[in-house]
Length: 155
Image (cartoon, rainbow, N blue to C red):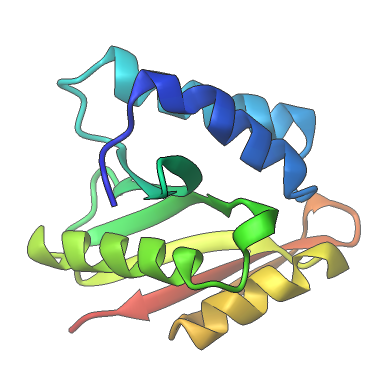
């Protein structure tokens, strides 16, 4: 794991697009947040770790503290190159974020995802990583697409 660098952006765009999980608008949002990290080094809202193998970027995770909460952190984005999915990079990214937020005093780490069938593998990954479905808001993203919030508690 390493910090985000500006030259990672083309590879991360490719990864976000090739997963097939994100719309163009979602990819744009992900890039906006990465831009904040790169362009505002003093900001403390977003943290990023990049996974790399043999000099090639294979994934990233973006997470950070939730404003106005005590010890609560969110995972905003996690994506791995479809070519290397199933090889443990996603697990290492999430474990890196968990270790980092625990060192920062985290009580819990939250993330949200869609209920759509295309996210079934993603939900299974979160559950296998020890996250528990804490809530579900029906029809949140659009009719028939619920927002599922997963949580991992540290205390």
